[in-house]
Length: 292
Image (cartoon, rainbow, N blue to C red; front, side, top):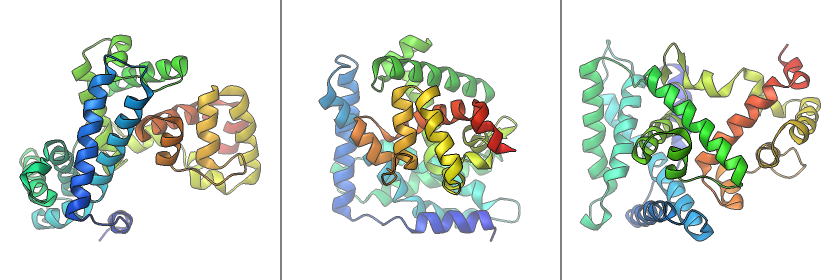
């Protein structure tokens, strides 16, 4: 077993499994969030709808993460000398997300019953094509355009824009924006090592090792430098996100979910804003000097 697989299994092994009632509760929150997102297209300024939509995203993430072990158990039955278990797991994770989108809790079935079929379908599709999950270069270009538009609107308005607002800013349909953001969500929830062109998503968003939170925390001097730079080169909301996520203000570090609830947005939006802010900080001469 590779070290990468051991780390992955250890990480998902810490996530508690769900009871049947917990699955239903999460499914209801997801439904409410999806409906709230629809209503936000007509009333983007309603904070109550935004909170419900954000809670739906949190519930969706929870349901996915709590079932990653199910994917591993199924994937192990499809591995061979010619296939990488990590590639099979990655294909299965895509099927898991499809299952979450299609889960109907009113049928009275456990989520695993529904998910097993979609996970196996995705794995078999991956084995037939012989390719790992990959985002084409043209899709990557569209994702970057959408993220730029989303960041621009968020900084201008001080809130997370709706898919419709992003579509109008970036050009394209709301459905296309929603689908592309789903692609990105697959990457965020399952692995940072999905291939994108000649690089990986992890290399794209994470930057050099010294930019990771763990490395930042190792140096008080660097933390002080980042705190100072955050107040001068970042937009106020970006600076707030960096300070709270990395505990640069002296308080305990916030999680993405905690910060999202505090701001009134989604964890995915917080992560994207974090990446944008880190990119700005990496370009700052005083911070870049720490990279050697």
